[in-house]
Image 1 (cartoon, rainbow, N blue to C red):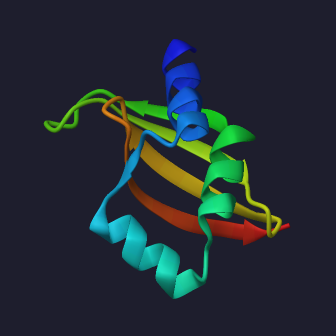
Image 2 (image 1 turned 90 degrees about the horizontal axis):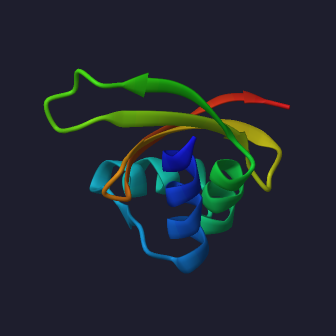
Length: 89
């Protein structure tokens, strides 16, 4: 899917933003930027939500550097809005 390629290109170039919620959640879990980037780069698109009034949201689930699975919700404007740890591998 083209949007996943766009999101990954934004990760590679560092041209993305984290919401404050994502920053707070990452700090609580001790998750690094490398974990975030790895889990998105290796992840799979699992859901597309077109009914969000803020815009279409894409959920990517991937494995981080620390070998934990994370779910990321992203918008095409390159904002990572939240994450959650799904399970350890």
